[in-house]
Structure formats: C-alpha cells, structure tokens
Length: 450
Image (tube, rainbow, N blue to C red; front, side):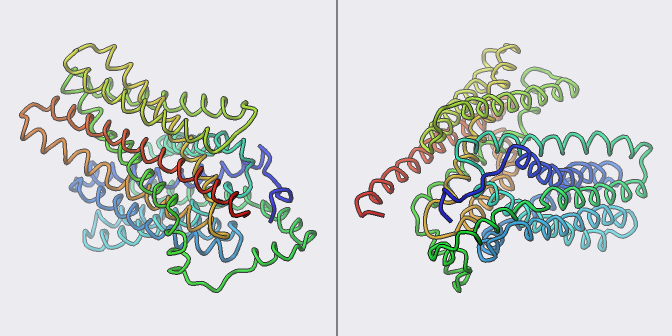
C-alpha cells in the first residue's frame, strides 16, 4: 500500500499499544524476578536453576524470525499478538505452579518450569515481534522515536506497577498466594491486551478495499515462499546483516553491566545493599531522562529522517563508551560523586541510544525486499534476546576470570567495564556502516529509476 494511503496511528492508539507492552512486561517481571527470588530464598535452590530458566526463555526467542514471517504471510499482526499473550499468560501461570511443585518434587517441578519458560519465550516472541511490526507499519516516520519511548515507558510502568502491587498481595507469603497473584496478573494482562488491540487494524483493511490498486493487491496477497526462502532473501540485504550485528553488540554491552555494577560499587566504594539499590534507581532514572529527551527533540524536529536517528544512535553509543570509561576511572579517582555522575550519565546515554535504535529499527523494517517487515523485526528481536541471554553470563564470567588474573575485585570489574566501552565503540561503527549502506542503496535506487 502506498504511503499516501497509509492510516497512521494517533497518539491514543499508540498508547493503547503501549498497554500491550505493559501487559507483556507485567507477566515477564513476575517470572524473571519474583519466581527467581522464591526459588533461591524460600526453596533454597541453587541460583543456577532460575538463571538457566531465564536464559532458556531468551534463547528460545531465536524463533522470532519465524513468528515475524507468519505475521508477514497473514498481513495482520493482531492474531499473533493475541495468540502470543495467551501462550505467555499460560506460561506465567505454569511457572508459578512449577514453583509450588518444586517444594514437593524437584524433578517434576524442574520439568514443569522448563515447559513454562519455553512457553514464556514463545509468547513474548509472538506478541512482541507482531507488536513492533504493527508499530513499524503504522507510525508516522517523525513520531517513531517518540512512539518507541511511549511504548517502552509503558513496559517499564508494567514492571514497576506489577512488582509493587503483587508484593502487597503476597504479604504474608504463601505458595497459594503466589499462584493466585500470578494467575490474576495473567488474566488481567490478557484482557487488557485484547481490549487494547480491538479494531486496531480495521481502518487499514477498509482503506485497502477502497483503493484496489493492482500492485497493492499483489503486495497484500501472501506469497508461496517458505520461511527459509524468505529468511535467505532478507539476510542477503547487507543493511539487515549490519543492523543485526549492531543490535547484538550494543545490547550485549548494555546488558553485561547489569549484574556487576552494584558489586563494583560495594567493593570499590563500600556501598551497603540499600545504597546499591539507590544506585540502580539513579541509573534507571538516567535511562528515563535519556528516553524522554530524545523523544521530545525528535518529535519537535521539522523533519525526521533515518540519518538523524542514526546520528543519535551513533552519538549515544560513543557517549555510553565515555561513561563506561568514567566507571573505569572512578576506582582510581576514588570519588563517590564522580562515580554516581558516571552512572547517571551512562543511564542517560543508554536510554537515548536504545530509543534511537528502536526508532531506526521501526523504519528499517519496511525498507528492502517486498513485505518482509516481520522477518526483519524477528531477526533483530532474536539478536537482542541472544545478547540479553549472554550478557549476564559473559559479564559475570569475565569479572571472575579477571579477578583471578588481576587479584583485585575492583580492578576486575573495571576491566570488564572497559571491554563494554569497547563494545559500544564497535556498535557505533556498525551503526555508521548501516547508515552508509542505506544512503548507498538510496543512490542506487535513484540511478536505476526504482
């Protein structure tokens, strides 16, 4: 369908899609944080068990390209969002049930938990990928960064609200309460999602029927290609490959510091558990500021091009690398204020580059071989999931190795921060390379009259 016939989403509709993301986040936060704590503390199980389950839910998300292909074939995202949230909600309930079962039967509990976390990963893959495809198709180019901010802030709200409210209903704790709270959250998430996407794609369907252009009809007709053929077709695009590597490297750098920042604060500056929790809040506050500033600037700009978003992405990655260098230097400088400023700036730059990257992703998805938005978005989603799954393992593993070699915990953490800074520089280069390929492709298209 031509751009002139596209019915762009209004801000209330974008906010409705944000409710879908919040619903996804509300279920995931219970399974990846609360159940993690229950397994380790209440059940006294090895921390490797919940860690492996969370990693499993990330790695199964390698199926995201296949989910995106399904969305491409049906040309509708809503069924995949509905089906995904139902699988995700069922997995969330089963995950809570497996925790209850673990208290009486370790083997059966682990087996049920494995199935549950596989379902969680599959549900997130289906709903999350289809949601991004819908945003990529229906959000006005100038609003993409702001829309990404809106949707991601709604997800963060879902995290915070669910954690806060469920915590109150779980007091005093019991496994029966845990199962009840998890089931209630899952049901509410399903209802909110179904209501949020109700009729969301109907205006587009009507517009297409009123403008039966031959080319448009051909574009809307599902092709007979297989998933492998579609994947190979998309993977031939150099821009897709470069952006995939950019997503992986940048998200690896982004996630690797999550599990070592607070331990570094403890060994280098003697922070108490309460102080390290406050430090995490400071960093997340910076992320929020970075997201909001970028959304405001880009939405107020007179023109919004892919190149400008790429500039924000490149700048955010390079600035994040400098903030990482600040963390490295904070140990020798031994100044708490300097350390906190570096953490806050890291949050700001991380928030800015991540939203710019998501905005670029939403624009890239529709550029290339015919109607493969879902496959492209699935590839990039799988790359991000893989990076997050490996981030915690690599970050903590490298810090342990560095501690053995260097002998000093603070120096070991600083060394890992330095490597993460290098990753951000590499990510900036990959983003620049992707932008250059886009400009070259545009010139080639004009030359051949496409």
